[in-house]
Image (tube, rainbow, N blue to C red; front, side, top):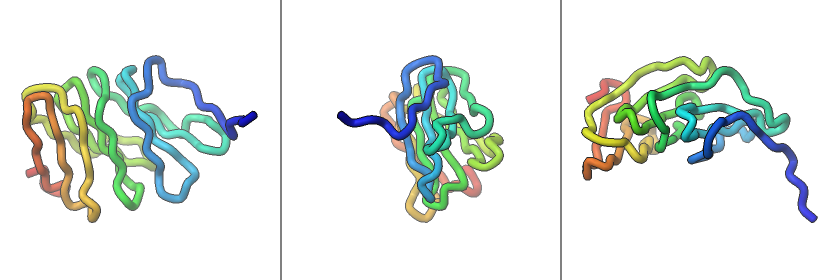
Length: 129
């Protein structure tokens, strides 16, 4: 029988997405408990504090360099977080409904968001335009 190398526990509701950070030592998850969390793969322990939204989080993306993570959700906001400090960096709010998914461009210069308002938006990740 197969046995997991590690098990993580800490979210208080269903986990929606999981992303692998470059280097292989950590993963990022988002949940219907309104938080984004970073986990140590070897120990299964949460690394640092939780990052939160006001409502369920649906979208999750990580830059190729692994320095920033992007989240979106029920609060119609798109938030950028620093992976090392877990600090909130920036926020965009222009969709009229739940922002269901987000994506970084390969070079990190743009981000894309898709919403229940039937729109897909493209943003300059440096200026927010």
